Length: 355
Image (cartoon, rainbow, N blue to C red; front, side, top):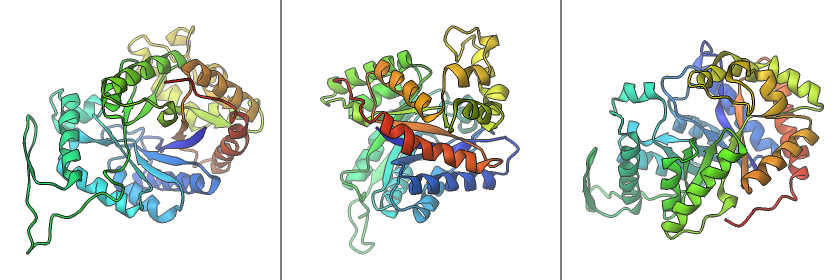
């Protein structure tokens, strides 16, 4: 199993943006030092809990401060940028990182972001059209696109201007990932149809099982062979030397604060529970740390991870959500270290089911 981190951190909305992004870069440096395989950077505009309006800038900065870790967008939100411009930025990041880059793309799920950019509920369709344009730009051949949302006229090579000539560093283009959160995610079906990397935000192992079924069916219909080794799964993770210490660091730290103050209420508004078998009004960060999340000693986290892995049928990379532990950075770094050095060897025996 490989390991990744999903950043920037969930942080207090009052935190200065510079401090949040500096923490994100610090976590990327730690991930590089500790042997993590990849770090993902989100794009959001109107939420104060995970402010990240320009992941490409953070990726560019992280490229100068890391050596081995793969830097991934999780994701560039296609409806909010002209796809031709985004295609060029992706090519620039691909070159800047020397190919140490995954081009995650998405439609954008936050209603307030959609309001800001006035996409009129067309985000899913805009993602499909934008992806078509981006793939054509990456080929570097003249084309004209007269679409529903954008018009593009890619010019012939001009000898005087010596262009256009820019192509991706990784040919035919960098690896593309698409994130999905719902059990029957349309984004996952799009990822499968193109043979792209699936990135899951899932609530439970059964949820993961349904996501993979939809992805795999779309992949086969699109002429691709679905490979669970390419599947990334994002989860809440905190590891300490003992179960008691891990739960204390979660419930008294920002991870617990974020869920108690915000995320649990998000689910309570529609009557959903983050803890199977627990009424929505009875869910707390303490309950989640004890019964749901991958929180505890290396032995406990490995046991829970193996259980989820087997229920889902297996996945290639566990991606741990990042939380703002600037008040206790040593504990957070220790958690990352234990995940790679102690949990990793304990789950190395796990094998993937057939896709």
